[in-house]
Length: 173
Image (tube, rainbow, N blue to C red):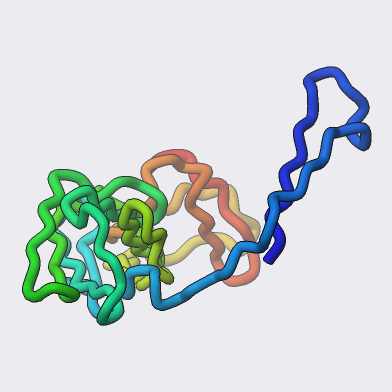
């Protein structure tokens, strides 16, 4: 790959940026990046922080630069209070605390300084519906419906609810 840098000056015409090409090329080497082999647990409880163990490795012979500075994100949020433990020269476990998330599948990405980021693994958070009240109502709508369960997003606008094909306004979580 050729590395190209464009610089746009604020207020300049967008197409008038200065362009420069680095000498040589950039060679992508997938074996230089860390690889996640497992994430435990693979499912988290909704909206509750939880410990997460990421088992990962570097390819044999790959440089492991400063493995103590490893960082993990879950759904783009930092996994906090992390500690990296070496099982061998190339195999590691990283234990950290994942933030609470609503229902969904979230990418887990591990980054090692100077080696780059892993391909994402996935951790899931279930959506559990326990019931709805009242049990019956008008087909014309206009009646409040309370849904019990877990995995809802904290902000009402981030939840989508429908009864049949009719969308409902979510007013409170």
